[in-house]
Amino acid sequence: MTLSGRVALVTGASQGIGRACALKLAAAGATVAVAARNQEKLAELLQQIEAGGGKASAFPVDVADEDQVKTAFKAVLGQLGKIDILVNNAGITRDQLVLRMKRADWDSVLNTNLTSAYLCIQQAIGSMLKQRWGRIINITSIFGQMGQAGQANYAASKAGLIGLTMAIAREVGSRNITCNAVAPGFIETAMTSGFSNEFRENALKNIPLGRIGTPEDVANTVAFLASEEASYITGHVLSVNGGMLMG
Image 1 (cartoon, rainbow, N blue to C red):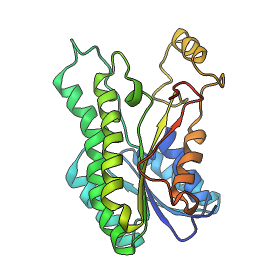
Image 2 (spheres, rainbow, N blue to C red):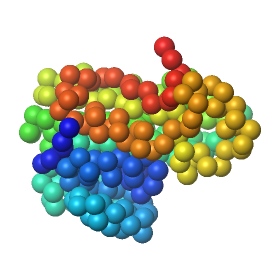
Image 3 (cartoon, helix red, strand yellow):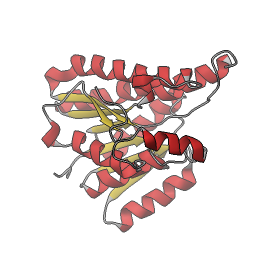
């Protein structure tokens, strides 16, 4: 499975799942445009990719800002010439029971997690249509499939990504462009590091494989969906959750 000659863009690439995806895609031969707000972490990621013999460029961007998204994608296309693979990974949480949730926290999560994916797809799709080849991969969540108390904004944004995935898959399938979603379960990242030991223990009871997932578990799935081997898969939500949710 090789991605040699492909150009991939990963949002939220500075840490966690996004970082793992960037490393995996680069290891598979893709030239990777890594995008995130934290320039220092992006610089560290570039060094790691290049140390492993890969190729990458960094593009600082806040995906919740439409003007920044347009500027960043214009820079990527200008520098790298095309975008073959888009991984919409950037995401935040602003957890609160819906009774107390502030409108600003609802808006910020929907803008960063869902609207940004629409903006990024809109900017990347022209390149894919032109070359009649593309892979769009949206990182959703198990909580977009089953909901989660205290995360109405997050769950809604991730469920929205699933609908967006299927709509885009139908729009561009005839042009040899696939659009799929990956739904991680409980993954060990900075976003989950604050969970209590009690929460972790209860979560493990509901995971048949008996372990918390790693960012690499998700990255391996993303690399497969980005490859030629996954050319007949589109509009699909691939769950990476250790069996936590079935059906």
